[in-house]
Amino acid sequence: MERVSKAFGGVRAVSEVSFAVEDGELIGVMGPNGSGKTTLFNLITGALEPDAGAIRLHDRDITGFPPHRVCAEGIARTFQSARPFAGLSALDNVLVGRFYGRARGDPRAGVREAERLLTLVGLEGKAHRLPAQLTLIDLKRLELARALATSPRLLLLDELMAGLNPAETESAMALIRRLRGEGVTLLMVEHIVWALMDLSRRIIVLSAGEKIADGPPDAVAADPTVIDAYLGGAGGSARRA
Image (cartoon, rainbow, N blue to C red; front, side, top):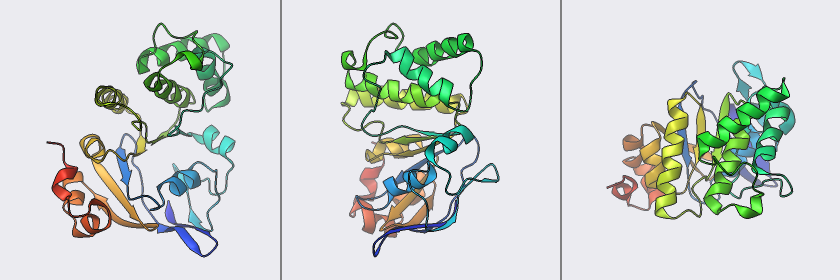
């Protein structure tokens, strides 16, 4: 994205933010509440249209595309609060992503891929359960499998670990590492700072809608501007012991 801005009334939620994501990268996005993280994700995925700037995917300008076209181009996302289709089984939820995303085609191949993704995220044996029969972490896994089913070139993770206990957080982190190992390109927002620092090779920090840092986790954690804006002087605590 290049110099992307979005204002609501007189408040600039995102102000001239620029960055690029390389294939296979896992980039973390962090910042205090109100820093523009959700707006940034909504701009990238087409839920909001920028006031200025450009959003490109593999040199194709997708600025202003509606969400379904952004998905068809190859960008998918998860939500902090899982949003499954309540009346559909886990398998059918994933098939929706498969048949309406970037990868379509043979229905039988789609079913096989949906089953593979359920196994990948840890939902093997639960394909025919309804969302109401799943635990919180299983709903997060389902959200992830459905997004992956669209065959994204870029996957946005919005606080995948929110609400999870420590053991579940470790499980979610292992899953993210597995995706990274498979070459999935990831951009993730996460309030569990130590987990974000642990997983990411590069961190982007937003404050009041502006990008104030972009670099390796250790450098970002030691940046006085970041410490002042986000870590409140606890830069050392951002690193996992």
